[in-house]
Amino acid sequence: MKGEINGLKTLIMKDSPLAYYIHYFAHQLQLTLVAIAKKHVEVEDFFYHVTNVLNVVGRSFKRRDLLHHHQVKNLKQLLESGEAHTEQGLNQECGLQRPGDTHWGLYFKTLDNFLVIFSSIIHVLGVIEIEGSTSSYRNQAEYLLTKVKTFKFVFMLHLMLKVLAMSNELTKILQKKNQDIVNVVEFLNISKKRLQDMRENEWESLLNDVSSFCDSHDILIPKLDEPYFPVKSSLILILPVATATVERAFSSMKHIRNEVRNSIGDQYLNDCLGCYIERDVFANVSNDVIVDRFQNMKTRCGQL
Image 1 (cartoon, rainbow, N blue to C red):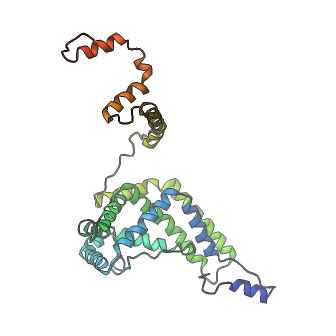
Image 2: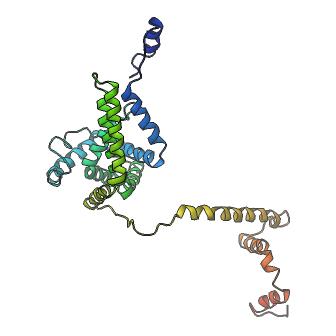
Image 3: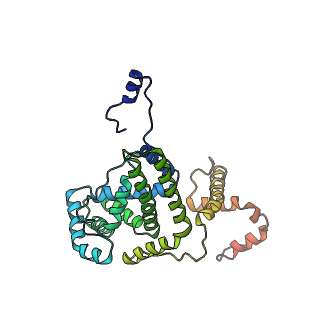
């Protein structure tokens, strides 16, 4: 399954036509998780930012050392708050290996590590934002900080960690050599029930965990009971109107700025376009009113 010997299955089937091939259960589970995750934009976006953050933090030995020293400094505080254990957080590798579709379980270890060393990651990104060797590094760190230090990101971090913890446990069970199909189906049903129970009964506890984590890391918590207004929908309604107005302006420009008026100034062009585009409004204004307006603008030698 690792691709080290390509075509091995085909060679065996050709050599022994009676051989029977059974797809690896854990392999199928990982592929299913990946397929489902990629269909959800929020999940895919979350893992995209996680990957970028850990790649930036672990890009050089200097940054990894900075991360390690900050972990050592905060280790006592993490142990007292219960966010880390003695065997966790300090000696773990914080770089992210990009798991393939059949190694989805590695994401669970990545998120578990990310949660433990969250404050250290924020610290390193803040240092890069100020002291980065290039403007590109500084801008990238600034952008990632705006994404990571949000309630949305923290919520997705806790949610995916809970879901992947269940699927990771099931994956380990499927990888046992002495496992039979009856036990596999039973464990699968148990995992499904646990996921359903989390959906129905653990929403409040999840929000409490997320809110507590945000409080400890100075992350703004939105007021979830306030009315929600879809700004994007409003922009979608405005966009066609704005586009039509611009198209009308460019179309009118062809009539105003012709060969005779090719050297017309910007201000004069704006005035002419305003009158042309809103000609329905100006049609209701009489010539006498316009003459009186210009007559009263300044003292003139003669009467217009």
